[in-house]
Image (tube, rainbow, N blue to C red; front, top):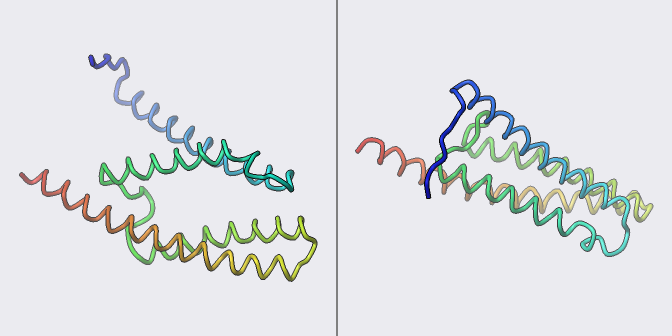
Length: 153
């Protein structure tokens, strides 16, 4: 396949990349918000209403992660360490557990049940998130070593 000519100078290329990145994150978090709003609106057959958004969200997130790891990129702002994985897992788990507790409270009207379910949800999501990030860190470190060895040769 013939590669098309790039008509952008370096500054325009950098701006286009920034726009593309911002667009991705707007769409990503827009889908998260849409799923949460639908979760509040629909009490029955929720999966029927959010399946499309969840598929797109998961596909976009999986592609982003896989492409970054393949190129040896972890993050611009977060260091690739077990400690940062712990902090990110904790923050994400806390945010989603609060939302889960609020949704359960709105659905069932029982504060104690909503709190207990949010605590259990937090524990499960924290452990799952930390394990996934740790596995990704191991894969990233291996890929990063391979890329550095290829550069040296």
